[in-house]
Length: 520
Picture 1 (cartoon, helix red, strand yellow):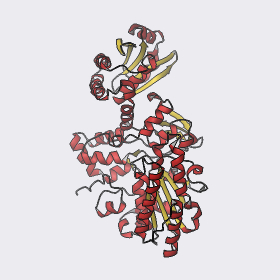
Picture 2: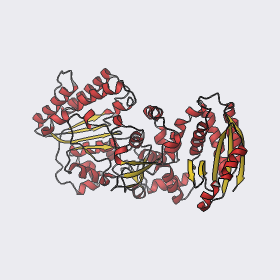
Picture 3: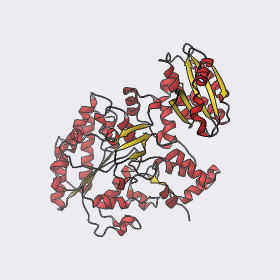
Picture 4: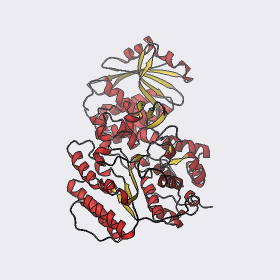
């Protein structure tokens, strides 16, 4: 049987169903959401994780389009299929706008909904008045309560989340627009909002304090994204095709997909969740690539990393309470909520009773993409040449040729124009961390031992490297410290050959001066 087409870039439920595209059935969640106690719901997930498709599925469900749901889980659950008028707002295009442009955008969306539902347009200046009128007119014209779906509610605010000047202005515009959701409560059947970040209810939704946030609810853990069980059930043909193209076994292709695109958890315990955008693109193209990260690294993230002075090595391995990361971004005291809600770190394990969780980078695609985004800060924009160097270093290290890898790095850094902040050891430590992370190896900095801390530990499939860095001293001094403090004893049980590496950087030249390598 021929496989179904993959819905690349298609976020409309009716188009997927009518076009016979692959659809991973999430309709059980639709029934659960719409028959729950809560009338107002909010779901936070990273970009391109299926939030828009979920909103579109809700749209079709509330319009009573029973024929689109034949063969899906909800077909055996829903009996009535009652029809409701649906207002659907997609805020994703409301980016990079000032106050006036954003107001025009909101008016345009209100007009589109008026035309679609046959409601006479009223000439009013304020969006909240027009929104209120629209809900009331629909209710009086149809005698039905209204469903309101707001997709990517926070999109107009994300690009200014780091700006103290513009954020309050645009936030007031959005708060004004959303205000009818409280006043029109008797006329509303259901309200669902999606977004990436969690803004405080006070700042965006004014008095609307009854929104149920299902983002960390265990029963909705895999409402967006694709689980391994769903891959095996729905994508067997795609797995076979990809294995053939990559010339690997079925198990090996699953391992590769897992390494690159899996690892997300939005609560704990939770099944592993794969990034659906990257996964479907990999199946469609027949190769592994950086699809999600390549589709756009938000500038606000890089700006916020700078604002909070976050070092590359500090992005993962974070212990935090739920209130520290499932928190309003405009009140955050660290970068953690934004990193988590944007999908750059995720829950790796946790204690739900204590609400303490370990957060880390989910997979190879995100780790490599993040490090590439941060690399220009350390190599003075010489990214293209550095990417070539990193690729060659990867081959050398995989073959156990650390000496050749360091020679490649020495040559590259010797050709990079002068970069700021190169007069302290930490600059080179973070540079090495970024490069080794881009090689997709396990790497950590400041690793504790009984006798002190190792500057860097690099683990490959065949070796464990203990790396000590010095600045304007000597490789002998670096090696002397490794041997003096017996760092290798700490890793005796790792079952890998331990290699000691001492590296000395020259701050004036901005590159490696000398190095020394010994087997433990």
